[in-house]
Image (cartoon, rainbow, N blue to C red; front, side, top):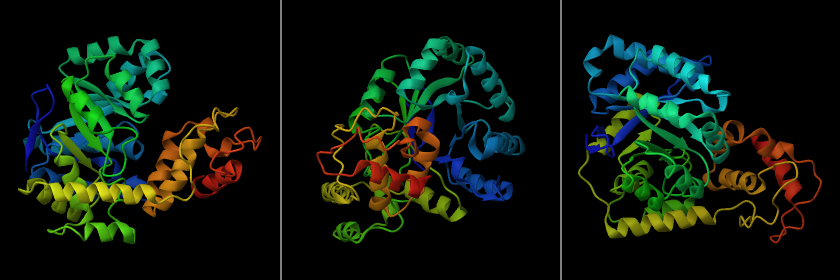
Length: 369
């Protein structure tokens, strides 16, 4: 396993981190035995960065990690545990302290990094108004590093980044996505001394399953053939400004494959990087609706995020999977932003790309609602 120093924290973190959000479930509950096998094998393979959050597996994830490390104290000193404040549940400043205390109990006091979860422009504005910066200072006073996980446009990222002396940032980036984070924003975070943790390197698995023919043909041009999972992880590890790449491994086999890749002595060539640029271009060319994101349809009087919804429709076609789009539609988008809130008023028309926007929004909700 390879390790990198996590920003200015001094923590030596494995370049592969394990995210427990996608651990297996049985009848809607976390499969504890499977979880123990997966986490145990990851730690044996050199992984020492664990990512969890308050809502994962209905709150069972944090308790599971706390119990696991209690039963295996040999791992306590060498692992770093990151969890997150559920910012959407915070109504007043006292809520921040209440959730932090509850999470600390669940994890039996093992919190090394505390992140603001799913930070967006509106939630950041709300938290600042409640005094979150004072709260973060108090958390840091307990020897815990602080940061945020981010789900908004990259322009918002820079504003948040400049608002506090962050220890850690967790952002979504992969061989296709650069709306929320890109090499420039990641480099900026590192220049500010923050450790950089990357989530969704495989886009929930959609970048390694059901590969479009035109994409596979590009991969096949490589002098040294690699599987899609290798391309995706190597792309991120090739970036000097990336510290940890999180993988939501849900089986021991996935752990063994990914830990082997994280231990391999391989570096991308210039030809490899050109192949990845062509792969990104091929994915981007796959569209169900010709939305250019121009914004002429905005603002919607009902609050619907029209370009965002049409982007989800394209993602379903682009990646031949609904999984990531469903997560964003159901869990990340606000109620008023969803396609289901369209009243059919027609104020978004006409579209410069000749898209029948109300009809396409209905199609979005039919597929994802």
